Amino acid sequence: MQKIDTICISHMHGDHVLGLPGLLGSMNLFGRERDLTLVGPASLEPYVRESLRLTHTFVRFTMQFIACDTSRPAKIQQWGDNCLESIPVKHRIEAFGFKLQNVPTKRNLKKESIPALNLQRSEILKLKNGKDVVRATGERLSAEKLCLPLPHSSTYVFSGDTAPCENIRVASQGANVLYHESTFLHELKSMARSTGHSTAQDAATLAAEAGVHTLVLGHLSSRYQDESRVEEEGRQFFANTHLATEGMRIRLLPKEMPRIDYLE
Ligand SMILES: [Zn+2]
Image 1: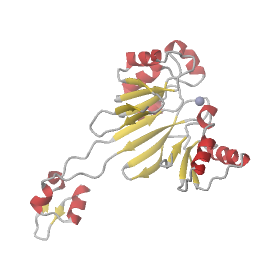
Image 2: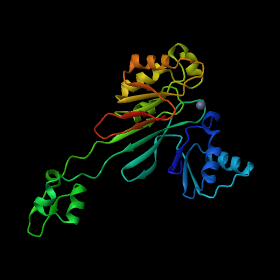
Image 3: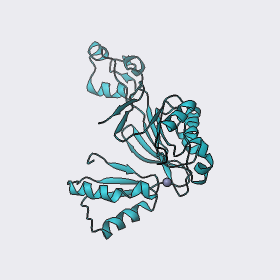
Image 4: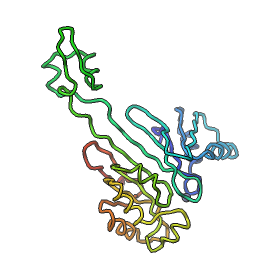
């Protein structure tokens, strides 16, 4: 957990935040010193700081809070070729989804290019950035010809708790993986609507419309002893549907299908 730099909180319902102060306390106990960024609703910061203060939990690392924009999808962080965005969604209280995207900007050189042209370091850097090099001799080295095409981008969208939501549909266009809540089966659609949630059919229909590759369903109501019913309902509307399980790991691979592993 010390490798985590950023924690995104979708909304302030207890089932989404009550564990957080404990996690922060554990991070401190295990010697964390590096900064931590917490992203979420504006009330996340007072909640965390008061919980820690009232429980006499002192953390020695610095916490930086970022309040999400409630009016529109907005960029939160950019590092390297990666971008994190918050997305306002439709729940009973202020709530957000998140989009994590990797858009490669550096090309890879074709293997044979370097020895064939005796490329210098500065020339390699320029070509990788997609820029042509003109040598003192007037020789022009084309980035297009010497480099491989840019790798594909990869996108993960997390819906948080929400009724079917246009912002999520738009953000998910062509995403590799969409995690979408599916609290209910569609037979309880009216309950889903009145509580600001989605059904498996809602989530799978949205996934199909958005053209995502893989749909992961989660946040199932505890009433479903047999959770495979939720997965089955999803698969009727979007074939590549999987249930989220604890310890599940999804790897986004450029050009390949997302790979799902289950940790013991
Ligand atoms: Zn909720």
